[in-house]
Image (cartoon, rainbow, N blue to C red; front, side, top):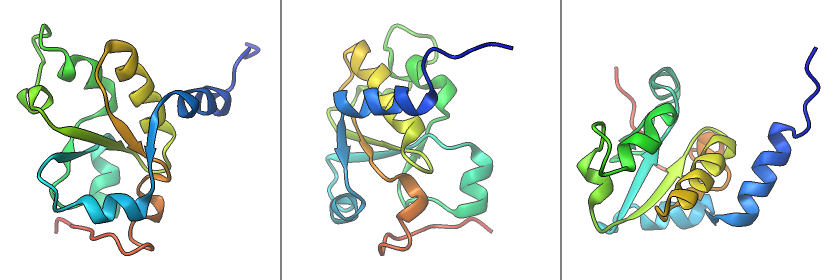
Length: 130
């Protein structure tokens, strides 16, 4: 059996110390600002099951590095726009690690500290697809 030298929780804690975090209430207040793009990195099944933030852009976590890199054949033009990006997942762990990786690449972004898990309970709008 492998013995881990670093746990996932430790990795997330380290990432959070290096990146910008946004509280749920703050992001709710920014939804109408056209200078912000909310990026949902959850799995498509999570979005189908729990809904999603209206207007959010879905980008699977496994492709983020390639989608933000203008030299990649997978580059998505939205990431070349002069916008402020806020990434989120369900609990804030995956998005913290994602933002740390993007910061290391030179791409500035913040993440939703608590993730989507508290979004609806705190009054955030949710869109669902039937």
